Length: 418
Image 1 (cartoon, rainbow, N blue to C red):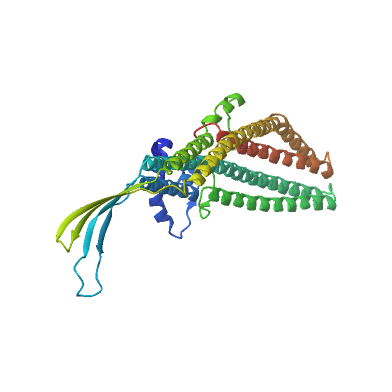
Image 2: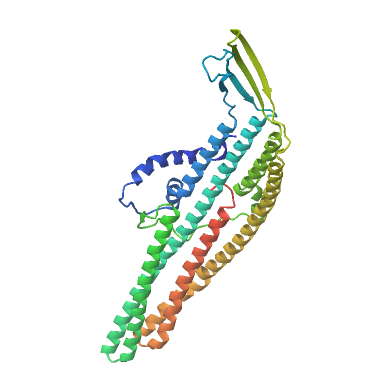
């Protein structure tokens, strides 16, 4: 099984382009991104995220080990001399040998070693897909948070403008003798508070954009603005449908591949108990009689002290550990799915209630209160709580949408290819 069968071809095309992109990214200039969409953010994460580059490099390393594991041992050149005298007057009884020795692995050890390394490569390839989906989940979550902070900043700016108008109205009433100085002081205090909240929202917006760039794999990217909305339609499958698809998730495939790889290590450990045979064919020159002969030797290690029992025991224990990890993976996936669905349903119910029941009424109440305050029918003390409730309702609605998108990013990562 090749890596290209494990992951989408388009994804590897992106990874190929990453090498070209990396050379240009070595420049210290900061790239600015305007109107960044979620799809563009995900593509940038595929290209720039170092975790993906590391996983691809580890797959290449596993490919090299698989190739090396199946290589046949090199032959040995043998040169030797026997009965070499210390004095010149000694009899010429020297013997010279030259030949080749070859170690021959038995028990299909090479094939099993290569099979084990190929399965290890598959494990790393499956791990790459798991890593990529987790990165996509983080990017979706960071994008949702950045969108929320961007729209929260806009809401705070509108609150500031509304408060500024209230200050102007109060000053006009004060000049007309229809308001007190303390009324102006209270509304100016609200204006100062709105200015502080706007500055805080601006800071949180910048932090969220930096976090998004970091999630994409390059914190030096300057994300200036986003193109998207918190209000989106969700087509949520039933919990039963999602639960049925858990066994097809990359995490499950990774656990199964790991189990197969550990089982292959058991087969390899069994094969390694059979010692390799070494065959030697030597040309033998007898100097005393000036005769040419040849020798044939066969050597077989005797497995008296090392029968590879420790390695076999280790491999079998690793299979048991892999089986336990597979069960843990299914348990974690099920728990994550149930929690994400509960969070998503709660956030969606909250956003619907705020959008259809609370926000329209809050808008109606605040407009009526501001009109009555302008006409002098109510005092500032009655207007300010209404305005604060209206502002809190708007921010609560945005928070509920942000929570829904974050929960959706978790559910999306459990729905199949993303």
